[in-house]
Length: 389
Ligand code: PLP
Image 1 (tube, protein in one colour):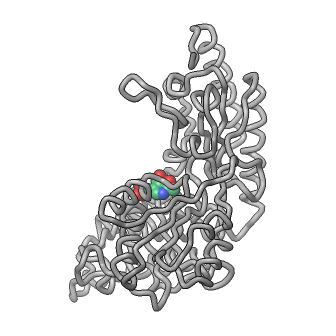
Image 2 (cartoon, rainbow, N blue to C red):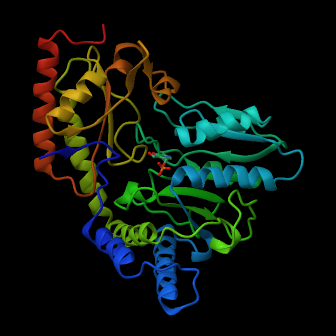
Image 3 (tube, protein in one colour):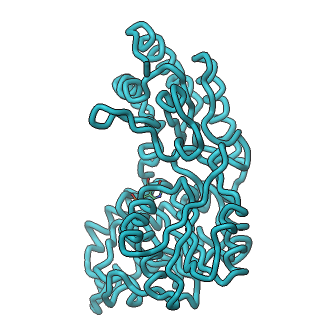
C-alpha cells in the first residue's frame, strides 16, 4: 500500500469525479459551442459545473472563468489587471512566500518594467497586513497574497489585507489554491473584499490541469487569451471532462465543508501524526504556525536537524510513503525552499525539512503505518551515517 502524505498526491480523484469525467469523454464529448443538441448537452455540463464551483465559493456563476489550472488563472489575473489599470499604476505587491506561479510571473513582469514589491513574512510564514500597507502608494495596481501556503499551511489574513486594499482603491487577488475545498469561502459575504481569486481542482480531489479564476462582478480584466469562449474572457474550446470533474469535486467539497467537525477531525489526525513524528528525532520542530486557525488542518512541515531531506524523501517513497522535501540538491549545491528561507528557517533544520500532508480520505491506520515507516527510515538514515553534514 502507498500512503500519500504529499499534498500533490493526497488529492486522488474521488469516484464521483471519475464518473463525471468518463461521462464527458464517452457520452457528452461534443463541443459546448456547437448549437446542435449534443453540443448543448456538453454546454449544460459546463454550466452545471460552473454553478457548483460558484456555490463552493459563495460567488455568482458568471464570476467564474474556467482555466487550465491555478497558474493560468494567476497569469490572467495579474496580467489582465495590469493591462486594464489606469496609467500610473505600474506596481504590484506580493508576499515573500508565494508559489512559483506568482514568483516566476513577477520575474517576467519586473523585466518588463513593472515595480514588484515583496512584503516580508513573520517567522511563522504569515504576511502582516501592516507590512503590506507599508508598501502601498498611488502607483500600486494590485496586491496578491496567497490564502494559505502550500509548504507550511500558514494562513494569511487575506480578509484584512483585502479590506485594506479596497479602502485604498487597489485591486486584491489571492492565490487560494491551497484553501479552496479545504476551508469555507464566502465571496458574497465575509470574504467580499477579495476581487480576484485563483484555484486549482486537483487540490480538492478534482483532476489536474483544470482550475478557475473568480472575477468580481463589475471588474474588467484585459483578456490574456482572446477568444469568444467564457464570455470573451478566455478563448479556447472548454476542457469539458476537466470541468465536469472539477464540478463533481466542488459538489463533494461543499458537502464535506458543511460539517465543520470533519475538518476538526482532520486537524486532530494531523496533530497526532505531528506529535508522533516530532518525538522520533531530537530537535525536530514545526516550520510554520502552531496548530490552530493560523495553519491549514492538513499540513505539517517538520524540520529534522541532521537528516538530508531529499535522501529521506527517496527512502520514504521506496517504503510507500509520499512526502515532499524543503531542500533539494541542485548542481552540487543545496537549494533551501524560498518559503523556508523567507521565514528565516536555515541550517540543519532547513536541510532536514519534510512536508507531510493529509487528505479528507486519510485514516488513522494510514497515519500509524506512515509514522512507523518514518521511524524505520530515520533509524536507517542514522545507521548509514546520512546527514546534512
Ligand atoms: N499556487 C499554489 C499555492 C499551489 O500549491 C499550486 C500547485 O501546487 C499552484 C499555485 C499551481 O497550480 P497548477 O499547477 O494547477 O497551475
